[in-house]
Length: 80
Image (cartoon, rainbow, N blue to C red):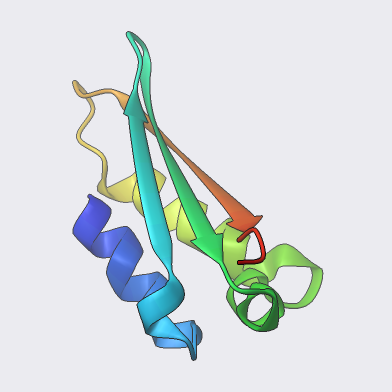
């Protein structure tokens, strides 16, 4: 599932080398945090969050019924 998330995010992000993925697994869900540079935030989230919502919908649809739920969160990277 992480490959699907990476593929979709990299289609919109211009600075692909600076995209970070953090995966945390809990008992009931798998949380994926995508950290982007400031210039890529708007491109990946989209107008009114439409791209981010579509990403979450695709991940939900691709998740098998008997597996854990995936939560995708998009955050800005801290300045270096």
